[in-house]
Length: 391
Image (cartoon, rainbow, N blue to C red; front, side, top):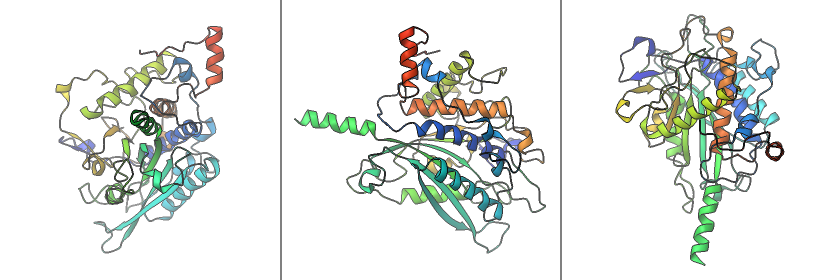
């Protein structure tokens, strides 16, 4: 669920469930496809992808988007009730683990577990399990002394679904100078990616500060109190997050994603540019009346203190920069009986996967890594532009 802070809009008091997860899962596949080829990890200043690199952004196989039960897809096994502590939640957790261990063994998999009572379960302690999937530079992985030097782009979504006592199912939701230069160069190269799948975002009774975001609150607290070694660049896991990108409710058609925070508006603008460029290159399927990300030119005086309460809040309150990718208004099927796999707009989902994959590739400075050989050949033949197309 998520709620608007500073707004009094009943339609937005609670949000998310499976569509978020479905999309985030789809994005997850796309992210993974991109990051699987990021072995070099040579990181420098933020540079837009060339046109040729955009044209070679990897796509997930169509089978990953199959929503039918029993299909061997990435998406279908998630489209079940996933209330924390239930068999459905356990099955989805197993699905995530099986996917990563079989398809992406180079990623580090980690669980962060907590328990809490809820307003509807009395004294019973409900388990909440956050799954963290991390890919650090290869010279860092497994070396605890170096893990505190890595700055990680963090992509997040929640995988739990809404608790409904009456059995309702919701699916859609969510020299000294030389030494200094060498040290600076090493720090520039210390970039990683992590994917966080939060449990317990949904309220059990009604959205409050204590009945919601169970998993993210526990994880933010745990990471704040988990210091790295004294010689590390970053003091703890929270400080090592370069940006938290929280994805939610992205499975419905014609989404409108505002820019919520001034301090990450520049990053929002980079994401919007990627959408524009992909559309102009004919690489997206949808043809919406307006862009998914329309606020690229939003002026400073239009930003307010209102925002949507969601899994990012415990991190934002601790100083982490956040890019919240969630539509306003929420999809009309949100938290209704129509919120299921059949109401996912798959062209929109696939477009989001393409946009976010390009964003990750650009953030990780993978221009020249993505299909480098193909781009070099096209450049020699004059068949592809290597210019930084700033549309």
